[in-house]
Structures are given as structure tokens and as C-alpha cells.
Length: 340
Image 1 (cartoon, one colour):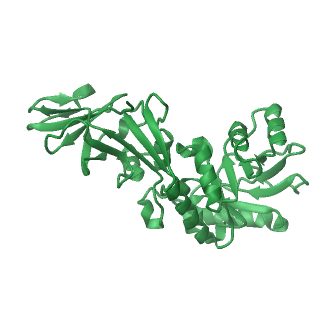
Image 2: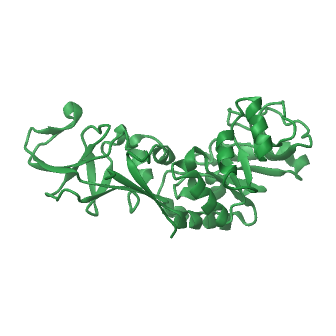
Image 3: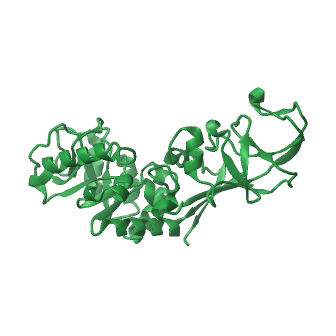
């Protein structure tokens, strides 16, 4: 028996894609499916996104792109990260992948997108050369569209000025946050990752932007016990009962992707929000209950009102780091794809 179950709702993903497309008013949407589709399953979410109207796919590495090409024979696939070798470039050429190029040397025979660094300070050209024939797109990467729209607009103006003479090429700059907040960022296409999975790029409730979480994660109470005053649970005695207190032991921990710094967050036990207490172990954690409950009682870790954004606020991180870390290997969790 698996200790937890991951559900991926492709119907919700399709609805998210359509919500984003309505905001674009004609620009293309390219679905970012790197990191195994942000932990949701790369091939499944790629197919759903394309079926809902996305016209391209974006990945981080050439091996990711090759894995997608074996499933999607003709669709546009853009590799956002650098190639590790000339051999990888050759594989990309043979597979018809498109490459983001952030240095002056442009490989022959591959469709490329020149990446201009307008303020992100990572990969990118400091100046845009006259694009040779292999160049099919021009791009940049926004650093602050989720937190500082003024600087994002500065980047967009730099990009617009640098690329205006080449407006016949496909220009793209927007991530999910810019897609939702900066219409001037849409250009010819946008690259949406986090939002298609129903996660807020602003780490707020995704429903505020009409988005539905795609991933849910459930488990159960494996043991229930009554702590007496002075009793503790977990390593380091971080939670000590001050009064008789029921706790439930959940058979999931940081080895499954429920991070050690999530102490203090809330999960749903029998449909009610309950706090996580004590130190989270590799394979288990404790929740504080308001009454005795039977072993096997359902526990919702994500979805059904338990937001990744709320967990991220407790852990001091971002929602998509959490979902990327959920372990769906066959020895840990059962993964179910729903096509609702």
C-alpha cells in the first residue's frame, strides 16, 4: 500500500491554459513543462496544454526536449537552458528542437532564439547582434514581474527598443506574472509555467486570478495517541503538550517532499484544518487534533483548499519549489492522472 497519493487533474490544467489565453488577446502561449512539468508529469501536462490551445513547449535542457520530442513529433519545443556539449547541440538539431542562445556563438543548422539580458543578470547577451538566418526568435527574462512592476517595465522597454528593428521575428518576454499583470509584455508569445499548474505567481490564492490548482496530495493518519502534559512528539521535543492533547502521526515526511520547515503549517484532517506540530521527520510528521480520530482518517496535504501558497509562506519559499519536490516514485506515492 502506498503511503500517499498524488492526483493530477488535467481538466484543471486545460482550464488554466484557456484562462491565460483569454488574457493574451491573440498572442501565443508556450507552456513551460521543465522539471517534469513542475512535478506534475511532463508528458501528461504537455499534451493537455497543447490540447487547450498552447502552441509550443518550453523545457530547461536538451534531454528534456528529446524526451518530449519522442511523444510530440511536430510541435515547437524550445530549450531555455544552455547546451552542455556540441554533441547535445547535434541531438537538438536532429530532433528539430529550438535553442535559446545567450552567447555570441550561434550553432549552425538549428533554429535559435537570441536571449537579451535586460536586467535579470543571468544568461543573456548584453547587446543584440544583427540576427543571422538561423534566428527565429528574440527573448528576454523578467526578474521582478511578480514583485516590482516598475522594474519589469524598464526591462520591457529595453527589450522593445533593442528588438524593434527585428519585429518580423517572434518576440517573447512574459512569464506567468507578466502575462497576468502586464499586457504590454505579451508581444508575439508568452512563456507560462507556474500559472498553468494553477499556482499563483504572486504566492497568493490562485483563485484571485481564476486559476485552479492541478495537483492534490492525500495521505492518512497512521497512528493516533493522547499526549499527557509534559509529553512531546518528534525529534528535539519541539512540541511539548501543556494539557492532554490528541495527535495524529502522518506517514509522510521530507523524504516524500513534505519539507522539514513546514512545521506550523496546516493540513486538512477529516475535512478540518489542523496544525502540523513538532519536527518533521524523513518519513512522518505529527498533527495536533481536537479529538480522537480513527487510524486511516484522510489527511489532505495539498489541494481541496490546502494551498501550496500557504505552505510556502510558512516555509519561506515559493509554491513551485514545493510541488517540484513532491516525490512520486513508485515506492513512495501512487500517482493518478485524472482527465476531468
